[in-house]
Length: 257
Image 1: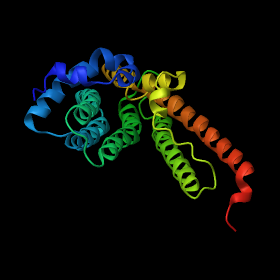
Image 2 (image 1 turned 180 degrees about the vertical axis):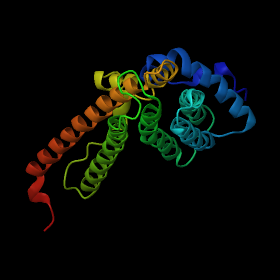
Image 3 (image 1 turned 90 degrees about the horizontal axis):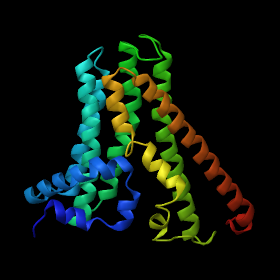
Image 4 (image 1 turned 90 degrees about the vertical axis):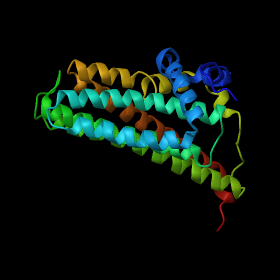
């Protein structure tokens, strides 16, 4: 089989094209068709790309921690953009060549590690070099970076705990099952889904980081991430708690004694 640029481009489903953020459609995804073609011809599978992208994510964040080294920070920003190309590439390979066991796990771990380390690493860069708003040595920027990183991780943990508990209760017939295999596809065009895709690490963030690193306003990126991830964590936590309270009130009597 000829794993060409056109093959991967034509193999991409319509719902995925619609889901991709604008910058991915214009820049990252077309490049990933080339990289997927190269990987497929070399026999490199999707999970391998995902696991290599974990290393890329760690190295990218480590470069931002190098004190006062402008070029190390630039290299870190470039690697974050390369990470996103790899994130698109492993998806192309999974869809166009072969899905592998634990593919979603490998892909998820890569993004969790990047976002979990990225903001705190960039805040260290600002602490040692200064930024547009925060002066060199200001400890508050580290607190904001930690808040951004922790908020994303906390949001994911809360979501996973809620879905695991809900699935367990559905399996025990305590609450009715709401499983819908086509739910994600149906929600692709929703405003919430579009905002999540466009504003996060799969959308404008890598380019924003690149520009901020070049022109010395990484602190603005950290402020943005603290508001974006912190706000998303608060909103999603309230939403899941509200749903759990509603389920509790409605199905309390079905709980085993």
